[in-house]
Image (cartoon, rainbow, N blue to C red; front, side):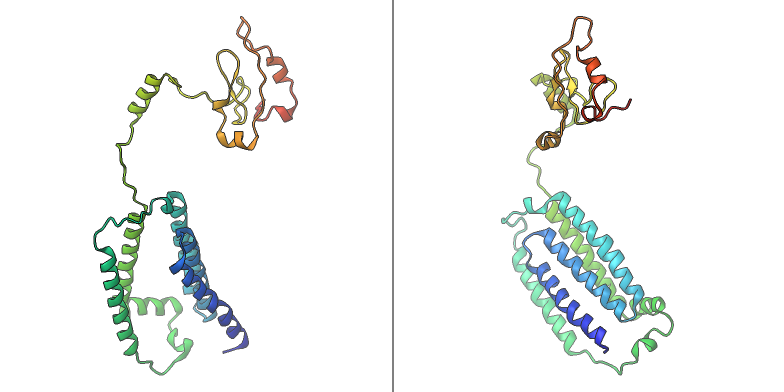
Amino acid sequence: MSGGEALLFWVLGPTCVLGALGLLFARKAVHAAMAMALVMVGLGIFYIAQYAEFVGIIQIFVYSGAVMMLFLFVIMTVGTESSISPIETISGQRAWGWILVLLFGGVAMYGVARVTFPEPVGLGGAQAEGTVTALAREIFSRQVISFEVLGSLLVIAVMGAMVLAHRERLVPRATQRVLAADRVRRNTFVAGKPAPGVYARHNASDVPALLPDGTPADVSVPRTLVARGQTVPVPYRGVDPAGTPPDAEAADTAPPSTRRGDQA
């Protein structure tokens, strides 16, 4: 082992171990997913250092860059932390979990105890026919049972993620017809909420719409812009009998800083 390889091992080895511990003991699902991604990137670098470039690149691009980021995106979108309940919905799942863990640990220890290491042939001998061909031959011939078991575990993991993300609906989902009838019953926004913009020359979201009497409708502006103070004030005083707001000419001649969204 060269000095650079030894340095790489002693730097990435503890990092991967810490990432694995973070996956096991993290209290939030997002942190656990990030720790798993860290472990996968470290394993990919290990593969590349051992001249298994194909496996290392696939490990980083596919698993770390695609699969784990997809899981992380789903976790952050669904928000599993808000749906996890301390009450068990499946009776006896803790007991069966401990039984399966002990059984898996016993089988793993039995398998490790019976492992025999043949005489090493080196990477050149193991990959004499090419890295991709050697990997395919190893997976689909000697390790086909282990590969299928791993695929089954991934399917079980996906089903577990679906169970964690599932939320019980207490009331039926309101349809479009029910929502429309509720608006008519409450007499609020019967024709829909006003769209943002001023006259036909503006369509920016930070400019409030005008009500029939010429006053600005603050409800047409997104709440995020209102909280950030990024709205454009529209001090209209009403509409004259001809139907033209008195400040129309002033709005058209206003400087660009006060006419964001002007498409003219």
